[in-house]
Every structure is written in structure tokens, then in C-alpha cells.
Image (cartoon, rainbow, N blue to C red; front, side, top):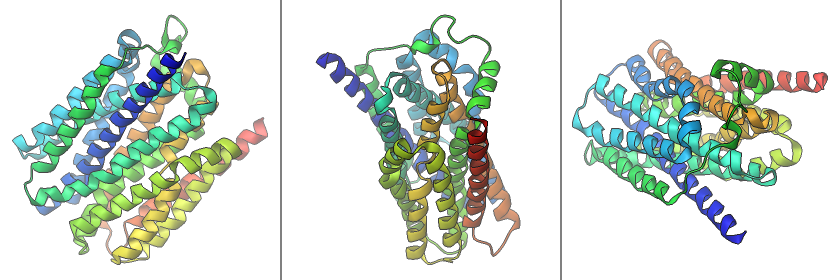
Length: 391
């Protein structure tokens, strides 16, 4: 019994490490490429469009993820995803071309989704109910920690343009090697005929049951991609240097890191339906305050940190909320849909941000994000009240 528990704990922490390194590569890649393209005179609209490659890859592969996971198990899918990610990262310095880099980002999106879907489903399917919230919070915390460190490596581009890509690729490869220490396993709820019907049919059933939980992944996807891909463009145009931009992005993630476990515990105690709208409302107010700070880096860092405290956990809270609402046999589909809604938000963020920067002047970029969380706050309140009426 003790040996089994030790093996489960080791597996959990290896999965956590893999997710943190994945977060690191994403956190570095978005602001780094945006800054490089801005420096080279690429238009903000094209810059934002290129950033969507990561999330288009995720959406393209999503309908095909359950079958190989069911047939081959968690480990092979993670191994393949890791190979795609670190190989693509190491290929960036080979040829500096907008189309080539878009293809590489598309491949990283495919590999990252394989990593996240497999690790996320492995954790949610094997965690005990009393530790599910804590484990998901740690999962989200590890990704946020990696994402916070990532932007700090973007200034390595000043030493050599290919250096950040090489460092990130080698770190991903190091984490990937840990997977070979794990024994392969299969998600029980996907065996046999337990999950009947097509992917579309299961998705419709899951969305009807847990639609309100997918607001969090969507909102966080919009926020993460928009903040990391397009805010650097806005900031550089307004006289904020790349090092300060990297610090602002890192301090946002730090806020999410600090609040991840406390918010997870509060949501366990008071219910996700109460805590989730509060995070949306707090994030909206904090980003609105950030929009009033002009180019004052210290005050921007303060307000963005507060925003991170509120909304830096919305993805992991969304997963927990989905796990509360979704039957066990639809849990893998729910995890997959969290990734899909995250990707839809991530696709929308750079596109809307690029259009905003192209056509709107003298308005803070933070205002877009504030408006988003006002909308999510209103929808979540309506959804919660509607659910309480129905029950």
C-alpha cells in the first residue's frame, strides 16, 4: 500500500514538472516572438495572427486526442507531445520567416495539447475526491510558475536571437526524459463501451451539463494570449522597454501563483459557484485600474499583480468546476473541452488585440481585458442564479 502511494506521488510530481516546463516555454515564446516581430516592423495585425498558430494547432488536434489515449495510454501520448514541442523550439533559430515560425507554433500547439490533455486527464482520473481540488490547484500552480519565469528569459534575445529558443527547447527535453520513469496507464472511464457515441455527441452532453465551467478556461485563454502576445507590442510602442514588459508579465503570473492554492481551498469550502464570479469581478476592477496607470511601470506592476491574484487561477478553477458538474464517464471529454475553450479564447485574444492596436489609439490595452471579465462576471452570475432556480 505504501509502495503504491509512493509511486502515485512520484507520478503526480513528474506530471507537475512536465506541465511547469510547458508553461515556461509558452510564457517565453509569446512575448519573445511578438517583440522580435515588432522590432522587425511586422504589423500588429500580422503579429497577432501569427500568435494564433499555437492555438490553431490545439483546436486541430483536439477531436483526435481521445482515441490514441484510449488505445495507447497516457505515457505514449505524453512522449510524442514532448518530442514535437522541444524539436519545434530548437528549429526556430534555423530560419527566421513568418510562415515558418507560424508552422512551428502550430506544431507546438499540437504537442502542448497532447501534454496537457494527457497529464490533466491522468491527474483528474486518478486523484481521490478529497484531494482533487488540491491536486488541480497544484497542477495550475505549476503551469503558472513556469509561465511566470518564461518572460524573464525573453531578454536573452539581446545576447543572441536564437538563445531563448535553445534554452527553452533543452529545458523541455530535460522534463520530457522524466516521463520514461513512469509506468503506462489507461483512463478507466474510456475503456470498453463506457463512453458511447461520437466525440461531438459526448461534447454536446458535457457542454449542456457544465457550460458555465468552461467560461474560466475561455477567459484565461483570451487573457494569457492577449497579455503575452499583444501587450508587449502596445507597451513597446508606448516607450516601455522589453525588460520592464517581461517583469510586468512575470508579476501577473506571480499573483496567480500566490492565490492558486488559497482560491482552490476557498472554492472547496464555499463552492465554485460563489468563488468563480468573485474572481471575474476582481479581475475586471484590477485591469480597469491598470488601464489608468499610463506608463508608470511600478503602478502597472501593482495593479497587474492584483489582477493576477484574482484571475490567475481561472483555468484551474474552471477544471475543478467542470469536475464537480461532469459525470465520471464524461470526465475525459470535459478535460478535452477545457482545452478547446482555452484555445478558442487564446485564438480570440491576439486577433482582437491586433485589430485594437491597428485601429484604436490613446486607449490602454488593459481596457479590453477589463471588459472581457465584466462580461464573464455577468454571465457567471446569471448562470449561477439560473442553476440554483433549476435545482
